[in-house]
Image (tube, rainbow, N blue to C red; front, top):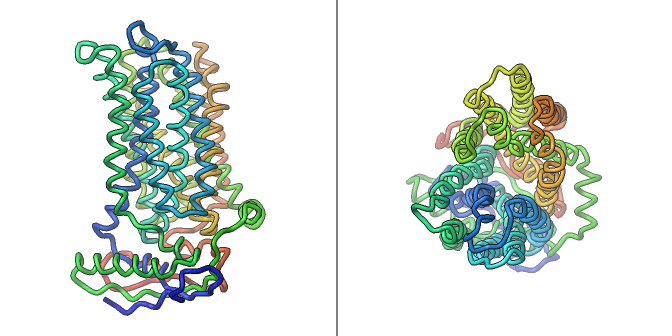
Length: 512
């Protein structure tokens, strides 16, 4: 193994100044089985989120039926319970996000998943509406915390060369869960297979079981060495990175490239909330405007389509209610294919071009869909095809919003920044969406539905234009180079991006 620069003082106490090349050592690693462990252990939780949201929407009618074992109406499931889930997600993101920056990534991504697991399992045994509502809130509370803890940990563990595509695919995997939720609901609601009061409970129990399996995998995911460095635990950081290097070298059968660049850190245990607010909203004001625009744009586009999805198909095209799940599964697949197929371009073509283009293209395609719908030129099948095309690009753009806010702010504010913008986007979707789009698409009037499409398209295009001017060229750059840590003593280059071809043994400067 190539000799590595010492990580600084052996003391694990704050107040020390250390000079380290640990970020550069993490960024120069080739892709390996160890990185797949990170992806599986941390990234698969979005599948659970997609499963959770889709299942609840699809079983709403069953819960309201006599014999379901729960005295609750369909409107309460899609209204009160959905609102409580959103409120829990927003509150959880902000609450756990602050603790993630303060206590560490690993501690929080274990706690938040445990909260989700327990709340989902207890939802399965609901015996009254108040119990169901309470644990829908707590399920959202856990999921909201997951977004902050997971995205910050992934960004800090994945090499700079792969960070963009990995983030996009992981965030886009929500839609794999949505597909699974749609198909699972078809089985769970079939009374020939399961009794009325059992099928819906098993869907929640399955979510809890999957969460338990993921929890077992997560035990092997280490704390972020970057977080450890800043918080005075450089000895632990050194041990973790050395262990990773040894595993990767053993797998590849060759020495690793020499790391290039180092950074000097003034260690401290915590950063005050005032410092975080000043950093995000004053020092990085343009990046905050970018994050705000991206999250609001994608939230409104998705609400323009999804809040009226079933109503549009049934009212305008006479699609039976029982069959809308199949159409939803199709557009969910389109949603996942966007990040999967376009993700690599965010690391090669670049963030600014790809973020702005995915937002603008999806907005323009939705304008086109609105025009065709207004003319009466679409059938249920062709409308679904149009939605697939729109969401193919929109999903990549929406996933890049999470990528953006997780990499353009300093290390000490990363989880809180993710939490803030996630809560902002979730609130826009869960509060403004139902108030605006559900009413427009529920009237049965062509003009109202067209207006809903146009509002979503206009805001998505506006966000694309903001990205064209403000998006940060973060591709293949070290996180410390994109946004210098608040604790950094000097503006030093912390790492070099890997060569375009893995395994060449050559390095190249980070993109300016």
